[in-house]
Length: 249
Image (cartoon, rainbow, N blue to C red; front, side, top):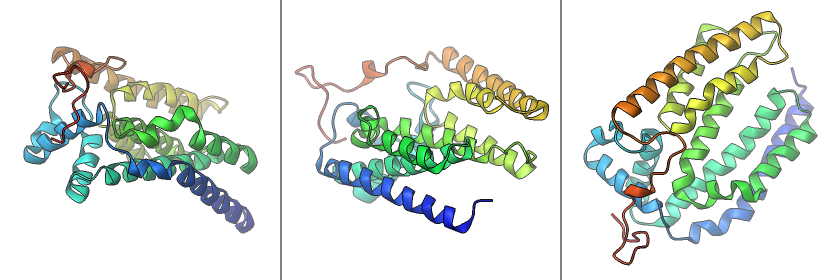
């Protein structure tokens, strides 16, 4: 177990990472919504009036992400600042969660903090902080990070509560973005450099999540829906001039 002084430095590092990301991306709360954000607003409006629309197999299947937009819509109505504030909070939370993940995987505090800070401030992660339509990427990252944190270390057994927690997070990932089908690769990675029982545990989890992903993909194909890696822009509302629609739904 980490000594008390070590935990203090972890909290200090997490606070500094969060503060740096908040300072860098604070201006986004003054941004308007753009592009695909409006398509998502349409989906959130439809789901607000008809919750069954959340589970529709047509188009992108991201009910958990749409549910967060419904919450934003109920709280912030037509104020873009609220939607951006939620995205910023999720981005900061993901950056600090990466610190915990890096420590869980065996990195020292210095390298773990540097990695987390690099991700939180990197231009490659700017979309998750700036674009509301990129929220599903952030939520999926949170799900994958939680799987790593719930995954037992080599000296611990996979208890029933821990297994249920991991299963719940996998379901949440499936409700977040189609790219969740890559989750079996994560489970395989968690079995690397482990003993026989750890490898078997990883293979079992990868096999179970692969079976779930195959069923998911079969349903998507059978319903003619969007598959992972394909674009949904064809169904995005456009203005008469050919650009993205910029009217609030």
